[in-house]
Length: 270
Image 1: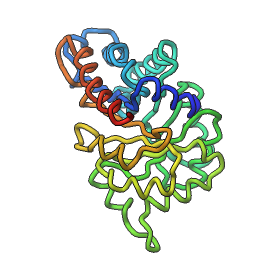
Image 2: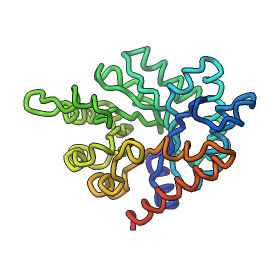
Image 3: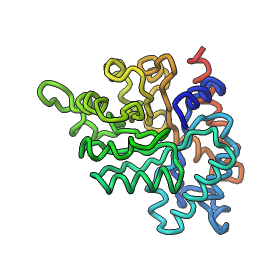
Image 4: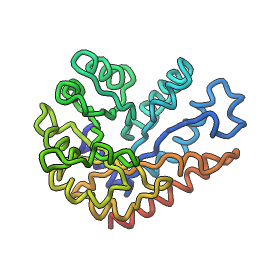
């Protein structure tokens, strides 16, 4: 998917909502556990109920890897279902990969070619030759971890290196990479006050923003400090939407929770 197509969806739906499919068998409604593939059945119901309210879905790959081959099959079925039925939606493999040379190329092939995701999250710690193999794929997007929403982010990301915070060094260096126009960045909603300085470095890039909802981030602050002319934001909510109910009405309740966020986004965009 091109950036222009993503922006068109945001304008059309008055939404920059990304829904995280962090599907946990211990949290999904118990009646689904008797299904042959409960993870996929849960995902399918959530997608069918919420697709008109969001512009992106983000399966966190760990929640599928945890169940071995059955989890990978459920993930494969989920992305195929999305691409076949809702091709206008942006898909993110939240895999947090990052390795050098041929290894990165293989990771990229797995998510971009085999599974046909639009984007994948990448840890930038190993530098240029761990990121550029992902950037080589046309109309695919590499989402670098820049400033995350967890408490441990302060261990490294905000430490000063030659008088500059490390996350700023990551941003400034990454825009020199070949095909850097294919880069997006993860910036946590709990770090919203940092967004103005981030926008000075990457004014036009899309930001994937987790941490609104369960982690306490403010949607209003994220929009105020992070939006650009193209909106340039994908605000993710996972638990707050997909686990809105543990009963048979789980999909309908998920849609209600998604609608609350979408209506807030619509007001902010006007």
